[in-house]
Image 1 (cartoon, rainbow, N blue to C red):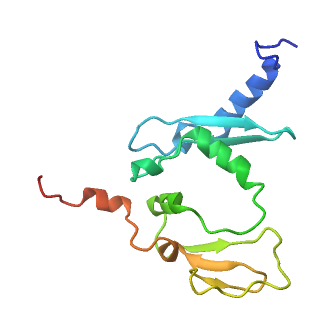
Image 2 (image 1 turned 180 degrees about the horizontal axis):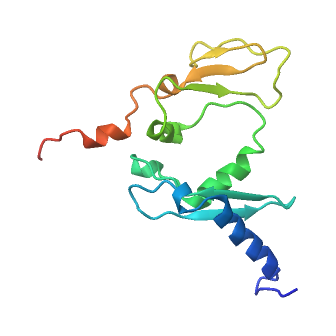
Length: 155
């Protein structure tokens, strides 16, 4: 077994590199704006390799690099309760209609005594504690990629 300068087995590096490449080719990345597809892989303590890719977005600030995609995939495995997505959730408008259902599922699903609906939160809590809502309810007045092509007045 040969080691790199950080003391890791070269075989581990090869496994990570191959994992990133076999997971998704450049076609699996979504890079219509940057035209720079990137892939990534992250080893976990249990030996799992989490893989991800860069994902561009019409809202350029919502673009996700491969490295953040991998970290998000790793971290989401540890969230203990259902929560509404943050504002960066607008990335879904790149790919989904406003009528697409969004299910916010508690980690301890099915819940025997689910909480009651909260009027200030979009959606309805169903049996089992799942909050059912839509992209449009979570993202009122969101813009879609097609709006980038709308005519603009010169400044």
